[in-house]
Length: 256
Image 1: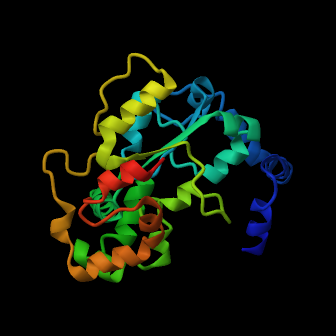
Image 2: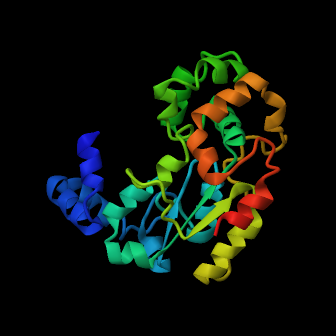
């Protein structure tokens, strides 16, 4: 932990140079990602093309946004701190950095159902078989499983701030914070900002319940609601969510 804090206390370009020298193969792969053209995979190339960086928080419409804007998965679930190793400080400061976040109670429920159905990859399916399947219900999962470190570290249950904060800092370093609950309007803002033309309609990719809209609020008790509030306190403190999204108008007003 001390080494990590010391590393992130270094200036951006110093940190990037040190990483390139101590982990040259990893750094080389990162830079190669900036040259890859792909439709079905990941690539950082769209970020250089459009002078932007999108931080894809899992289960917050990121796949839909990536496919609509970039035609692929772009940087997938790369954290903002890792992007500082990919891009120089001048690039990082110049590029338009944006993200989308989601109500933590809704996100946990969506992630649970998504993984329970097998997720998107073989890795998702294997992990879910080991860590999700043993629980008889969502209620059991939240009460007896969500507190486990192995679950909290899995990307779909990892706190959203982990993707967005530079270690040692409590300040978001993105230029625009979009809300899943205000998706169409916030997505249009990004499209206009990037001046990208002929954008296809924003489709709901990876929808957990494409044919059946389940209201996450119906699946919580006071106990499980409080468990999620405690585990994701950092998300709630920074993004300002209330359980029923009644705070959304205030969140939108105060995000700038």
